[in-house]
Length: 237
Image (cartoon, rainbow, N blue to C red; front, side, top):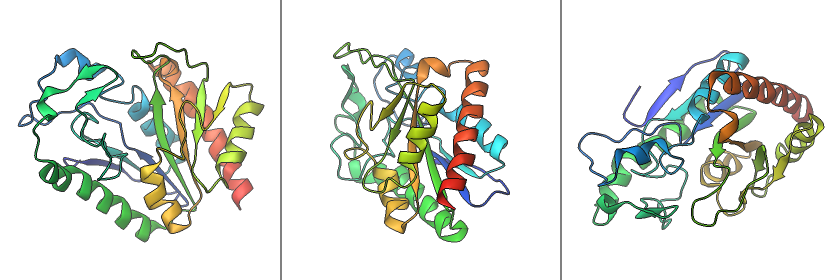
């Protein structure tokens, strides 16, 4: 495990799993100036996404790359010029330690090596399908609107994997968002760069985090996503 990534190896090289927001870790030399309790919230980490990615990788015997730094330090699922790359505020919470940060230094330390690693891995492995695993909060603090979806499928222009994934999940009776709870046409940086940019079918999966807060929930959703992935293999073959 490096400062920016954890790599899980697997024999099924036609699939690669990614998890950009797997960790709430803040390196000891970085002071965000926040209540440590905030690191357990969705603003710091995609709750349950890391355990879900590891369980799914084991189930599929597929490789996975998980980020090992909190999105409050730097959001690896943003382009380097994105305003929210190093957040000053997240869902109503101020992050004072980021107000005067050396942006270029933080990009060089975390963002650039993480994306170089993904690029190298994809060139070497040449997967036929890339899955990015995320989770979302049932309700944002700022607007208070309920998010009714159990799972969302996000995508940009390339819908080769997304549309079959939506159909499959809805076929299991799951309340499934099509580019919800937010649109992959607006926020899809990692897959735009490493999947669409290489012509590889991909899909971002967003599981509502209250479904994967414990081992039983992770096991259930790992089984669901393993079934979906096997179906996608057939539809994309």
